Amino acid sequence: QVQLVESGGGLVQAGGSLRLSCAASGRAFSMFPMGWFRQAPGKEREFVAAVSRSGDNTGYTDSVKGRFTISREKAKNTVYLQMNSLKPEDTAVYYCAARTRYYSGDYYSKGVEYDYWGQGTQVTVSS
Picture 1 (cartoon, one colour):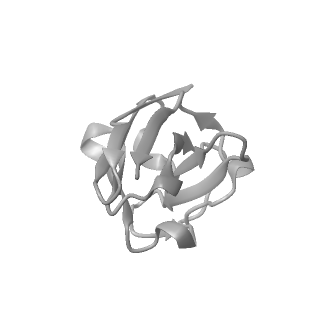
Picture 2 (cartoon, one colour; picture 1 turned 120 degrees about the vertical axis):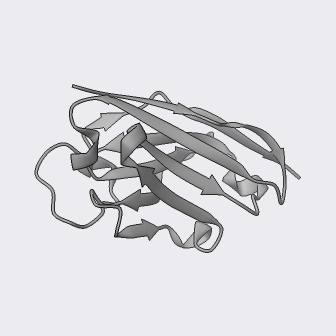
């Protein structure tokens, strides 16, 4: 079993920054590729960013490239999403996810590729 707990969400003005954290417990966190997804009201869940098990490979959806950075700190069993230059369209519930089945050294960008999910944290960006 893997438990994921997100934190760091909140209300911020456009142009501001937030750092989301996802703390993992249970099985060996350092072995798992991790990802961040988001879901806005009335919309489907979408991929935001992902990191490989080593942390060397990362991927982002086009709308956040250059503004968001995903990273992992294995000593703390935590993955982060640094979000800068936030826009109202970034408003959503943000979820972290872990892939525990077979994995390569790459990252994964589809929700179905992940096995465990956190409960989500709300990010609201006001204009």
